[in-house]
Image (cartoon, rainbow, N blue to C red; front, side, top):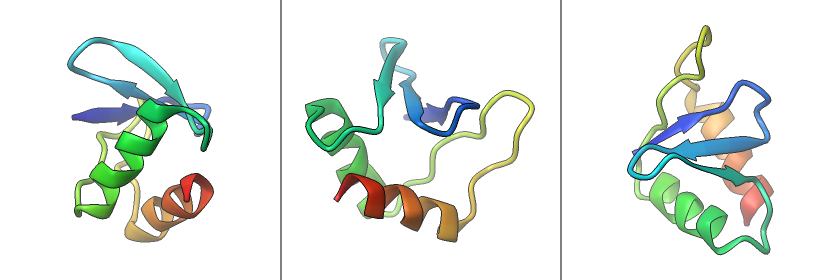
Length: 64
């Protein structure tokens, strides 16, 4: 499971608290992208809303 961080440029991996930047060279970001492509949706950032499918698609495009 993952949770978006409010800056929209990284995600928090809930299993270990690792902050993962949206960087194609980052292997954790690649794993997050695979997780998204499998149909998963990250939790909303604090004070935010759950991302729409369009927002998820934008993250996938950024990481692909």
